[in-house]
Amino acid sequence: MSIAEAYEMPPAHQPLVPPYPPRAPDSMSTLSRLAAIRNSTIGSWTQQAYEDDVIRGRFFGRNSFIFNTPDAIRHVLIENYENYTRTPAGIRVLRPMLGEGLLLAEGRAWKHQRRTLAPAFTPRAVMTLLPHMVSAIDETIATLDARHDTPVDLREVMQRMTLEIAGRTMFSFGMARHGAALRDFVMEYGNRLARPHLLDLLLPLGWPSPQDISRAFFRRRWTRFVQALIAERRAAGKSEGAPPRDLFELMVAARDPETGVAFTDAQLGDQVATMILAGHETTATALFWALYLLALDPAIQDEVAAEVRDIAANSTAGLDRLAFTRAVIDETMRLYPPAFLIARAAAGPDTVAGMQVAPKDVVLIAPWLLHRHEKIWPEPNAFIPARFLPGAPPPDRFAYLPFGVGPRVCIGAHFAIVEATLALARIVGHFRVDLEDRSPVMPVGVVTTQPDRSPLFRLTRR
Image (tube, rainbow, N blue to C red; front, side):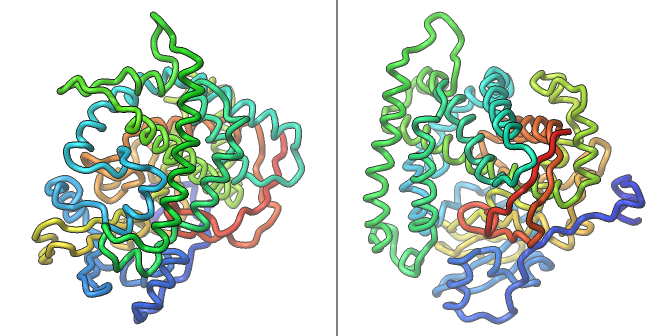
């Protein structure tokens, strides 16, 4: 069966294959591989990683495993997930920005946070935040409309828009006064401190590396900034006798359903940092890639525009009718998963896919590899949104992991999908999106799947 037959594609439409990085050579020294990882983890994988079920290697004296089969992934992330914790290098990189928030917490602390936060991210709770999303998206469109038909950096625009959405949904106020400072924090950390150095990989977690000292200074400045945002929101008061109007009120009111315990001020600060950073940056990146793909594939873009026409996308019914737009988002996150790598260290011995895993061995599940694996996906490097339309053969639950899977699946997944689908629909419904610069844009794996540069786009009113 051809790919067109499998997904009921128009025969005349040849699937777009967007640019992707070359595979790493089969043999690399440890230092060469480390250099590749510092530049982009994606560039450190060989062709074999896209074909085999298990890749076993050695890295600084430890076994490492990449698992590419759904059964192995189910075992690591669900059946025995408590045996697998974040790697020391991952903690070093993420903790200065996220503290002990939900993304990094382990054991009892994680269970308390997850139970307490869950009510704030139900589909019903997310729908109450739609007006915040719509207002920020429409203001962005109005700004772009004033500059239409001139070159524009859509990556920066998406970052500003999703940051505005994060601020309004979190605090009920815009980020006009704080956005520049927050973006400076994100850029400073990403450029200077987020890339792992050799000592980050070699030293025990309790031994600070030179980078850790710089990260600690950064952490103090970042924490003061987040606490200032919280103080400003508290000064605005709460909605007495009315339903919570933003995520902050939901989190302040939240109680662990088993213990009745609320978040401490320090925990609340870490949750705010986690939600703002993890939410706005990953969604901005996903929207950039979606717009880039649509600019490269005008036929698919026209299908999105046709679906959007005459739909009130800010209503529940409108969102339910945006099946093709949602499929574009799903396929974008297959090709460019925001979290390209899930790295875990084994706490105890285990057997996975016939492999003996020892304590401290590193287990890797890479959505980037899994989503492009040649045994799992027909034409794995092609952009084919029809894969995710209703009626298409659904992917295995453990072969498509844009938000992870299992107990630690991203708590904000529904929020992110609603935001991205709504934004893409409204932008493409208003503008035709073209690339001003046709030079290839390559994905780079550093914390998230980022573009190696920000190309200019041209927007034309429809």
